[in-house]
Amino acid sequence: MRKTFIDRFQRPGRKKGERGNYLIESGLCFVTFFVILLGVLDVSRGIYSYNFMSAAAKEGTRYAIVHGNSSGSIASASDVQNIVRITRLRSAGAQP
Image (cartoon, rainbow, N blue to C red; front, side):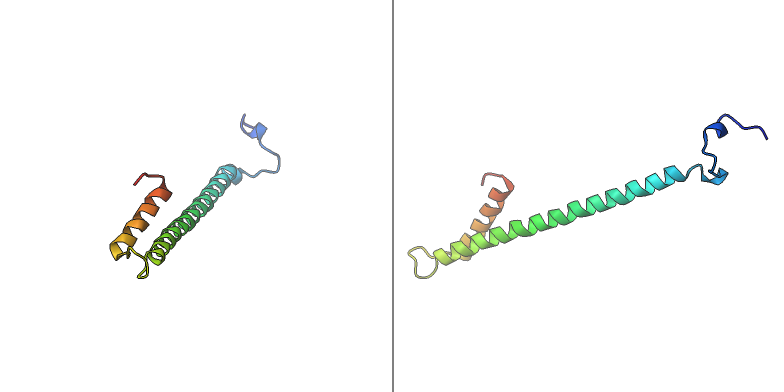
């Protein structure tokens, strides 16, 4: 049996049906890697959003406590909501 040009460069232990194994295995590894990477990024974004909203609620609560019934200027619900909105905008980098 005469060897073709491609057969000369193959490893001696390689079988004929294993030619595309490297390509398929690499593709599966890359897909798995990118799925895990995007999953980590998505979870990180969720944690960031949770901390972001927690800080805004904390700031609104602090404003409501400071401007309670015993202070000279009583805070209404709309005042507290405006403080939370302003805090969210400032945390996102926008100017209110």
